Image 1 (cartoon, rainbow, N blue to C red):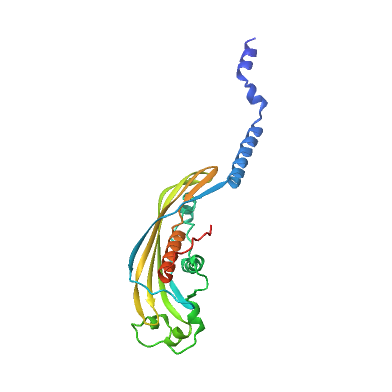
Image 2: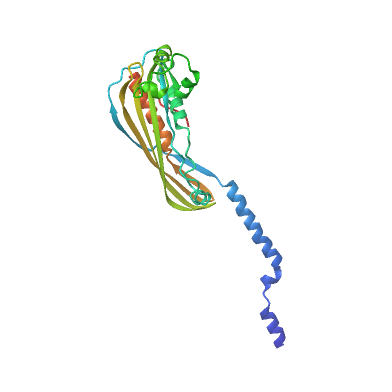
Length: 259
């Protein structure tokens, strides 16, 4: 009688019904479900406008005339360095960096121009590759010498203004606590574009102005990812392009409707 009671008390009905192998199988199944949810979890992006500012040091600029050409050149910012581990735990908050701001700047000028065809926009590199005309003058202080352009080419191609754009980009991580598919990550981005403008026929410096844009990249993730971000490079580029068009045409630029 005593032996029966001990046997009954020592047995766990739940453990008898679920063999250890089945328990491990269920744990493995839950793991695969979690992996599957990681891959299929949705991601919602909420774009916001960056906080931007303009510092003006430009004099009055005569407007472009029909058939004039605007020459654009400059330096793109260097991508911020981040390790593979840093990229993972910050949800790639620096990965939104794009390195062709000068090219996008040229495209945006054309998109926001309220009078299409009034003027053309050329990259300095393309003009230099074309050659033609006499050689640039030997004066080391001349803007034409620095750009490797001749007065003959300026007159022949109707090159009116040259715009040099220099970009700088800064990123700082605030919260690196993301591990897919959970967590939070946050970092701040800042883009500064400085434009210097020259009148090519007279080789006169017309002044400069600077556009800065600041914003945050924040991600909240609990299977479902919510990303709130401000694309400072895009916002600064659009702001700069709009200012250039307004100054060089005297007209209000169009709104860039690209997503």
